[in-house]
Length: 119
Image (tube, rainbow, N blue to C red; front, side, top):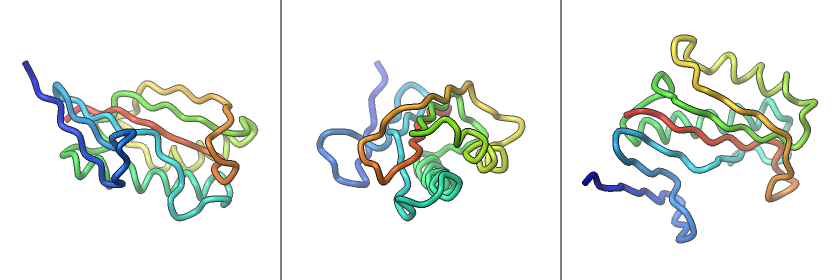
């Protein structure tokens, strides 16, 4: 039986930010930390920096992404988000991905991203 490793760098008893299990790393949905209320491209860049940091902490990288889920508060911002995403993603490791329009927990945030990666 494999163990489940949880990390809570933001100290939230409701959820784990990083969960490792059976050769995979699951990240919680992330929103802009340093750029709330900023344009979608800036928020996306901030989130992708966080993803890089958390994947490194978990012993993996964006080259090993398996899936990505992206929520936009306005699907008309799809091109702006993709402009940043396309410059960030490993061209040899693009994950299976979904992107939908949704209302997020706070009007400060225009995008949220959640990923899973292999270790």
